[in-house]
Length: 89
Image (cartoon, rainbow, N blue to C red; front, side, top):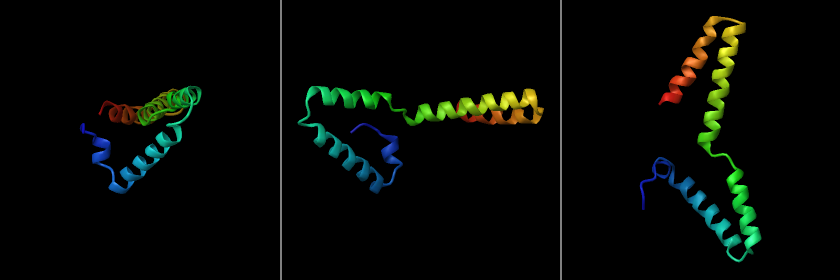
């Protein structure tokens, strides 16, 4: 099995729960027609992964900080600075 840092750093109980849910999904689709499977794949393609959510939140916080610097106080420059330093990691 390939190195999987998420599984390695997650509780065994949670990994088992994810495995059961994935297996249940596969079993539900194993006898499905092509259209149903295609619809399910399309739905999965539209879901956001955690990286996309974090990138969007970081961008919104950085933009908010810049707007607050321009309209309220220069001390708000700490907000985009902190966000971008975490983003750099």
